[in-house]
Length: 467
Image (tube, rainbow, N blue to C red; front, side, top):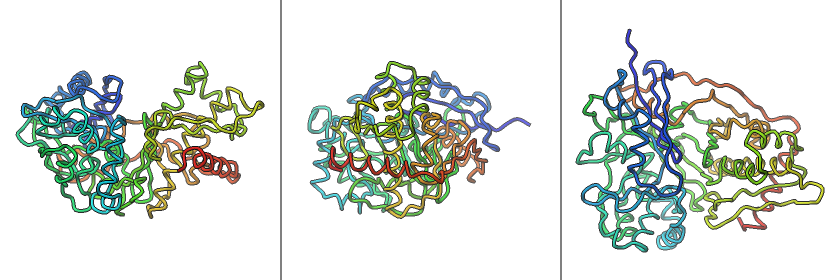
């Protein structure tokens, strides 16, 4: 019997990945990828180039018995289009922090409580609305030409479907714009117009299993999703599962029924891709912290890992606060990193490597604690992303997090979630695919060292950064 094939797309900061999956079992059949240019702003046409190179266009045409396709992508990126559908400016990505002053101004203008209670998020430089405000203030001649604002996944879906009159999105991605209320499930176009200085059209928000359309090749296209919501779909996350992803950035999130309104702005009250909520904290400095430290030590990443594993587990008192590119959680867009606890006796390469690992994992543990403080149950952590494969990270993760840590079998879970959503749109029923766990890590009985390291991390964060 011929397989029924669905395709999932993950258009991330770094690359476009396209997976072909058996619609009935979730079995991975093929993975192709193509890189994106580096940087925090990009011509969206480069996303399409990578999509084509990774086989996405062929899939959309129905090659290989593809029946349905779903797109997930990095959240928040601003794609501002004129009346011809042409970007008026390069897309500003989530990790572009130039709009930090506008984020502060928007928070002050309306008050943090309004944002948390009525929208679900408090503006930070990552969110789309702040980038529109930056354009209004700094490039008003471009802002005056904006007719439509899309997000990366919206833009790809729109192009895959041949640029129909009406673009579409989903709740998960819309909830990261700053002008969509996750509480009322409605756009706040008054906020968009205030930020941009003019009205602009936005995509229609689809339900989790709705279809965005059908390609000219007869392939069904699903609603799509933001990358983190798609990862939760791909992992089959349940109440009590908290996903910690260590990629270019770090993210900590859970798919839950609980609605979050955090006026501090630490926890973003996003929507998930299954009709619930996705409270999330993000750090700008993910696995790149380890790569940067390896460069500082003039070793490759494998040698870096070996150095970290050879160090005392607490790095002999050395500790890094890894805010190398500024930070989103805590909200320190202009910060730089710090190395603390330095003594003549502990200034060794292996301790520096381990201090970097500790700093990365402690920053994610802080985010995990923030979810707990808002009533999100934390039964276990599902650890994903490229950084999760580091033996040095795995060695300390359960002790620092204080709960069991599951490592799924290596996979492209964002793209898999998009494929799962495509199968949902195809059949009208949520597909029950099996989740494969490769390793389970449990906290050790003697984890006092981790409690001590976390206390020192919190103390130094307060002393140096005031948070």
